[in-house]
Image (cartoon, rainbow, N blue to C red):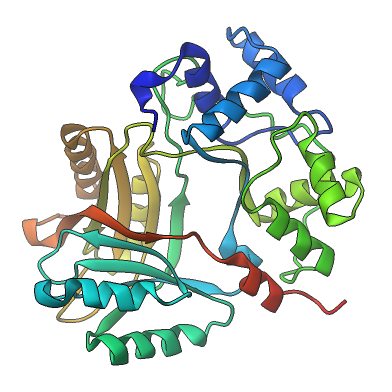
Length: 359
């Protein structure tokens, strides 16, 4: 697998340019390449497409296309923590991972809650049932930590080189204004055609000169409908962004620190947005405490390319917190991931099906 050091100057520019803001037009690589040339990167549309294709094949990218916001598509998901005793660790993990509802699972550094996984289901009430079944099978108590407030989900990973930006927020190129004019709706359900579109693009767009036309052919709709629907989904929050999705491990972001904080309830509304504004914080949420076991209510995920960089970033989160409340040593912790135990991605099909209007 490639690392940051293995990337050419053009590849660095492409990774930095379009982690969002990719145009939704018939031939998107033409305006995308033109915008890069305006920023000093000499690349044609064909070269841009070929570079993205090569990065994808080498594993530098997880995919290219829309980043679907599963919570807006249907169903529910939650973060869960549990304890796997050292002498039964593999047994407990295997039981958890065997559940098709478990999408991600990480081992994290914590004296008690050392296994953290995500449960994704089509119906909200199914979460409680799944956790009860896991507890019965493993004999270990689970702690449900659903998202109560979302302050940031912005997992972007830039590399040194062109278009990285000299200041926070300046990286990349935003061409999201290119595309059909649409009006967002307040419809929470999907039509059958919209459901088909979501499932077609969830793993990425075709790496061709005309990706949206190819998607249209695959779902049996015309290209203009696909363009308009994807733009509307962006406006409605069903799609967070469209562009390259880097494999952050391949870019050298190997230090994954989940910082957790026992923030006074009356300042969470101020603290959350302030921490979320830090450019290296990729996720920031308010979640419930569990009395006697888990005292923390604010989560902020940071990533670094070295242990030293990661710890500096955690300290910056602490400094930001300290502007709003008196942070004590026992008021926070950092849980570094030590192992990926499972990573299959959120299964959207069942969630989308449950939220689709009858034909």
